[in-house]
Structures are given as structure tokens and as C-alpha cells.
Image 1: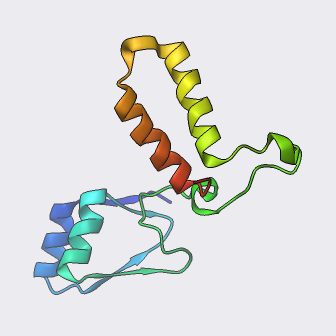
Image 2: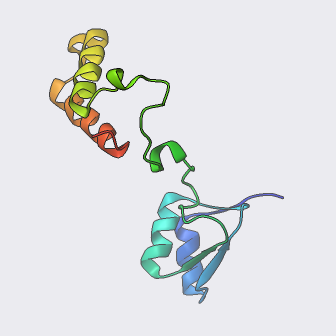
Length: 118
């Protein structure tokens, strides 16, 4: 079955015609702007499975808090600070002065925080 794609303009037109909801099936795809416009205009996006935006891939490795794999010995399970230092040193060794160290620290901290390590 072919996919139906909706843009921001399509959502605006539907709301103007009085459409208040859209049944989201696996064949319905909204652009990110269309999804945001539907939310702003109060259009209900009816889904049967997950609460993710239609265009967002499911990434369980980002949404689940996981510890280091059990195969890593506890003695080699670094703290957040140690891990940040290791990552920073490895990136700087590989990239040299091509990367801004302050920006690198910010990125590493965000990644460690989002993965639950720090």
C-alpha cells in the first residue's frame, strides 16, 4: 500500500476544512513541520502503537538507561568523569586541533548525561 505524506500546508488545509483528527497508520507520514503544526493547531494524531512522532525512528539504545555490559569487569567500569577524560583524550589524539576543546567537552557531557552514565 502506498504511503501518504502530509506537509505543514496539508495540515493547515485540513484544519481549515474542519478536520480535527488524523488516524496515524504505518502508511501515513508527517514531516516534522507538519507534526508540529498539527500539535499547535490542536489536531489529534491518533496512533495505535507508540507515542513517538511519526518521523522519529525508534531508538531504544537512547531511551533506555543501561549500565555497562556485564562482560566488563567492575574494576574497568569507569566513572563518568573518567569516561569523559578518556573520550576527550581519544578524540583530541585523533582530531588534533580540528576540534574546539570546549565544544567537545559540552558534547561529551550531553552524551554521557543522555545515556545515564553521568
